[in-house]
Image (cartoon, rainbow, N blue to C red; front, side, top):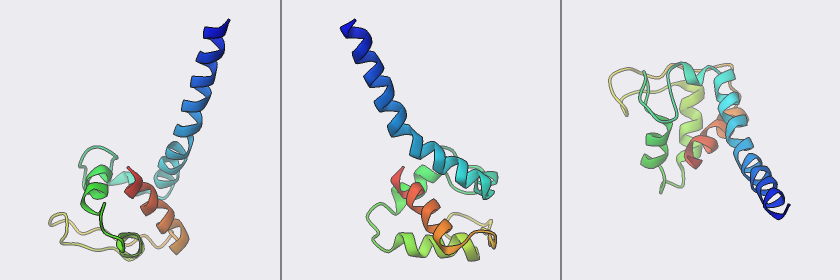
Length: 103
């Protein structure tokens, strides 16, 4: 009985920790980000884990990358420019970028 209780507690804790990541992945998918990006592999754009690694120590990255999400940009990850995404608000862009940088 004690093992069952411990197992149930671990499952609950793990599902609670994973929920925000999935919610943000779902949010990024709903904003078409995942059409060109993946979490762990390069597609048209860089893998989000590579973006997180590149900007890990950059304190101003959230603001700059959120602006790129909305306005587009190019030249940092190769020849293909990132198009603008006018359906994303400033707050939504910051939410997506914060999630990416947390990876």
